[in-house]
Amino acid sequence: MDAKKTRPRMSGTDRAKFVAKIGILTAIAEVLMLLELALPFVAPTFYKLDLSETVILIGGFSMGPVAAVVIELLKNLLNLLINGTTTYCIGELGNFLIGCAFTVPAAVIYKFNKTRKGALISLLTGTLSLAVIGGVINYFILVPAYAQAYVGGDMSVIIGMGGAIFPWVKDLFTFVLSCTMPFNLIKGVVCSLVCYILYKRVSPVLHI
Image (tube, rainbow, N blue to C red):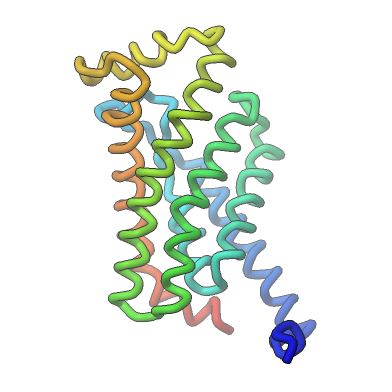
């Protein structure tokens, strides 16, 4: 039997509800993205902490990992339309890739284990993925792109920003290990905690 023929399809009403929920969550995520905060004791100030991923986690938990990707993408496109870009779209690309590295694994795991324990495992996995994959993306893509765009490829300028916080930061590897990954861990823990507190309270609305 063809699995595609047996897969249940959304009704028109369900599709309309899905689109509406995506739109509402995207708008909320964008508002929260605007309320960003630097953590200068951990990382250079071009790293900003916001709670928009909390909304995307909630969307991913309630509607699945595809919804998380869609909200992540729309959030960054909406931010480009509202604010433009001061980073040649590097920041928006990085926010999308790293956001997906955080929210998608969490949403996938929770999809198959919708319990409090499953939520904790999902959020822990997402946070670790955010730290590790975010570190890899920064090492190979984002930090070199920032350096090329802003300081003519002179990586020592950005490394120096990390070295001003932690004296042992001497190269890109120690920069990512000492600044980027701890920052992402803090972001993951904060967003996960807020999601864990709020999800059961708001999920009834999202399942209407």
